[in-house]
Length: 404
Image 1: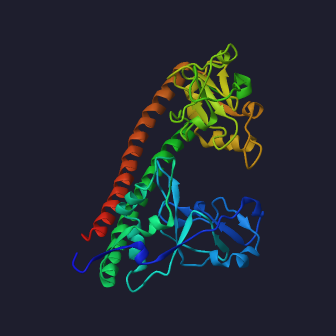
Image 2: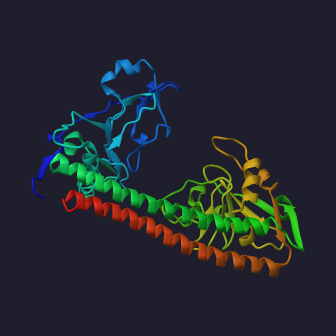
Image 3: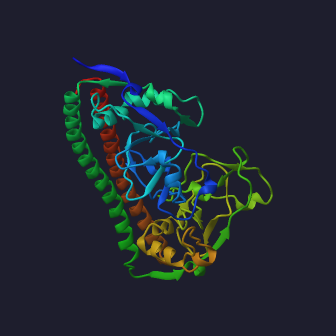
């Protein structure tokens, strides 16, 4: 590390805090946006379409000292303590022709001394594990980490000569390009594994054989709405809500909620392999195959599907993952901002299935075997993605330590 120095960030640049714009100032639409932390994405990207908040256009002149321009470097000053994704990550501003006003808890790095630092090198150092650990260490035990201007400017940055900085950035760019290429390949393989399984399910249910029936759910099942109660952190029965269903139709076991026992609540107790469907929200029409882990009651935004004919619940659960099912669900649902898929709509869903119990069991057995293989492949690709992310961190750590 010959000719390397270490300096506080404040010796290289300054930081401007944003302004505390009030929500009452927001307008429905304008060309002037409040640039908030939600516009900063993990990895240092910009997303102006992520929950945008608009301000009157005359604010651009009124608050011109907070007006961002293309190429400005901003950082988020708040993040979740449990999983920091954007805290302190340098992000290059792209205005896309809009007037962007710097909001509170977002800082702008300015007066960067270009004689001391090559900006891409500075960005790399600010995303290094050493700096991230420094920011995390400023957390005070709460749910959020809030870092102040002086704490950011006190961060220690290694500074080789600018020519060496350029060499390191060139090498980092080459390594990161290779890592990104490998990540895209793993992501594609991960998506392909899921799509192949879903495609197989679709081909089975859309090509019925001899002895198959085609009926609406209303003809072969009873639908039951769930129980209304106030969710608590402790209680006698777990309270299953629409937010407890993951994207794969399985039960999420974090942030569990409970209710107290009552004569009325006991009517809504679940049995193993019961089918529940979310009737609204982000998980609308998603079907859960409940696995009995503890005594549980289902909430009112869920619908229980109870077949009156000899049909395996698990067979319908697999059907709910097909394109045929989702085409119907999207057609039958009402509302755009908050889709609604109630019991009446559910009864109109057409389900094609074999009448033979033996055939149903054989299908479910094969689906489960293929699902297990798919999950193994997914686990391999997810691990590869995690390994690549760790490799990127290790490379940055070496660059920070002058070992690259």
